[in-house]
Image (cartoon, rainbow, N blue to C red; front, side, top):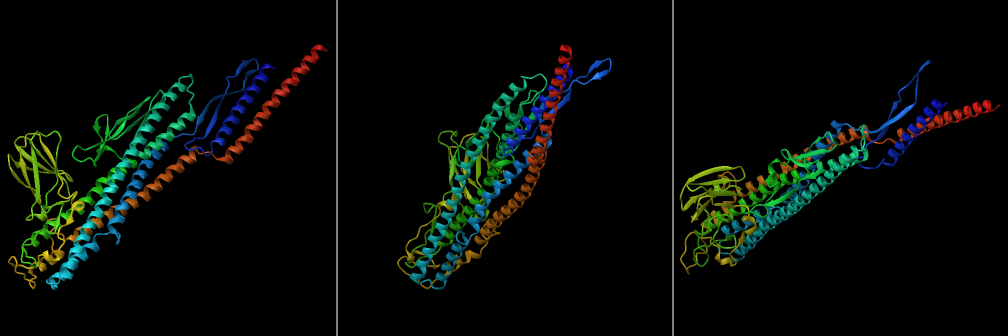
Amino acid sequence: MAGILSTALSGLTAAQRALETTSHNIANVNTEGYSRQRVELGTRPAEFTGAGYIGQGVNAETVSRSYDQFITNQLTSSTSAFSQSDGFYALASRVDNIVSDEATSLSPALKSFFNSVNEVANDPSSIPVRQVVISEAESLTQQFNTLSSQFRDLRTQTNNELQGTVNDINSFAESIASLNAKIVLDSNRTSNGQQPNDLLDQRDALVTKLAEKVSISTIPQKNGSLTVFIGSGQSLVLGANSAAVSLSQSTTDPSHKTINMAGLDITKSITGGELSGQLKFRDEVLDPAQQQLGLMSAGLAVEFNKLHETGFDLNGAAGKALFGFGTPTLTVPVTADPNNSAGSSVTAVYDPNTTGQLYPSDYSLSYDGTNYSLTRLSDNTTTTIAGPAATIAGPGFTLTTSGVSANDSFLIRPTFDAAQKITSLITKPDELAAAGTGTPGAPVPGDNSVALSLADLENKSVLLGGKATFSDAYGQLVSKVGTLTHAANISRSAQEVLLNQAKQSRESLAGVNLDEEAANLIKFQNSYQASAKAISITSSLFDILIGAIRG
């Protein structure tokens, strides 16, 4: 009798555990990251008797979760890839809208300005026509300033988003490390490999959220913890400990942020996730767009001023600069490294004879005690100049050094801030220099030779090695940004399909199906009732036996 009762009780307990687990599944049907659980049953060892081996019932050995490492890794990598493409596309679209929209584009202002210069060439003595040039020059510089300001706002926004993403990465890493400690503790409480399934699901959900921020790789450890790596193998989470990721700024350019971890710059090794998308946008779209816009404004100012200063105004006076960067002298911004030796300095001015050599990039000038190295930072092309040299001819600009010592370095930005700083300097229409000859105090109203040359600048290839006009340069900017944005949209759509497939694979494996769970409820209910019936029959048999003994 004891054997029947024990066997029935084991079935009753197993059915109860199965009903509890099924109820748990149903309750968490909408819980993000939850994996369906099931009770794993095992037959108890049979007991040998003279009549053979008699079964002793069932054990509820463990509660397992539906989990597959390959599918989980696939979901993690797909999440990172989609987040990168989605973030990059969203940011690139903003630049594309700015440079291509007719209302915000530079093209109309540029065209209107040269149209007004053409009108002066047609009627050089007309004060109203000259006034239009003054107005259009001011409108053109304001449009340069506006576009540059919009790029700067996007840079500030991108830096803020970078900081927010870094904060999220650190928060998720700390949470994963905390869960690692709990999982290891709970796993060690059992001797037969029981797993804290709900904690494992919570950790997997955090890993997926972390993958949205940055591409990661994970390695499960024997004690139940999970090691998480980012970049080129830097440990973000190791057991119950997490490392901190931080933003750092360049000493020469506070607006340029780098990703640091344990004192190392890991920016170039960051892949996937929102963080990579933000960095890619900055490096491949925003920086080149701002540099290209600056190239146009610097080239226009240098070339227009060069011709304008050869002419004479309505009063016979020599022409002066129409465009400036705060001052009539077109100086190039140079920033010295804070660690430079005392008294060392470098100044730079645009060279009007080599405008075609201007390139949309920053430069680094360093001195090793023997030679100077001028590096174009956009592609790390380096030119070596024998030193010491007081004057250095750069591509489109000239450098003058003073007191430079070994290991000093300087950041040179010929185009980066040009569109932000360009201004129109002439406010009086009679000061426009349209004539090719003149004498102070002797007006020459009919001479338009310089005005014709100024008008010809519109169609003259003076930029990018003499291969592009101002309109061509802007067209290249619009085309490049548009191409990158379109490619990002295609990549985003493709990655979204892959992500949905990965989610569907996980849902098929680990998702809770209410119809299936309802069927399980009925099945386990019947098992429970059957085991309870066996117990009832055992009780009746005991009663019969006891009654027979008493009788």
